[in-house]
Image (cartoon, rainbow, N blue to C red; front, side):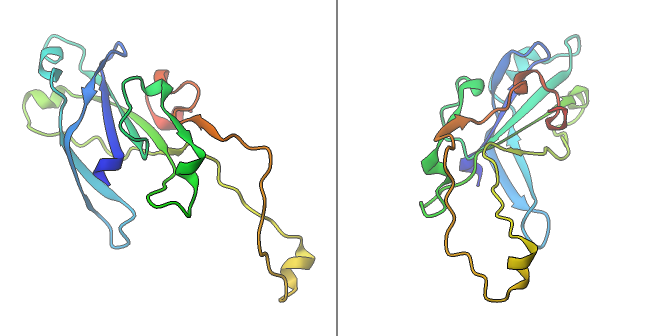
Length: 168
């Protein structure tokens, strides 16, 4: 999981500082659907952070997006990433939170809380009429989706100016 997750840190002015290093994780619930992560602030963070500076920072999470994160707004995904039959395919996701890091002046760590992630690709639902649902012999053998994008951007419109995922 950590190899599929990137956390990028931005200062209050939107300047990219770097990526969280040595990311590790462990499950925090029995069903292993929620995880806690820990990592080291990026190199160069200390130069940007001191008592007199703005202590508000943005943490952008990119999941299942690969390694090309030099310009987060340009990260794309292809149809092969979404193919459930392909080994290692996963839906790309994105999320962001903003945090005041003042407490790091006196502590070694800070809990950023939950960071909600948005899917970069839509989920498709097939709905049946009541007549078909009530018929026990109704079976869907296949479904075809036509006229869909083969690629797309991971970040939604307005992502770079958002402070929290829920803002979008």
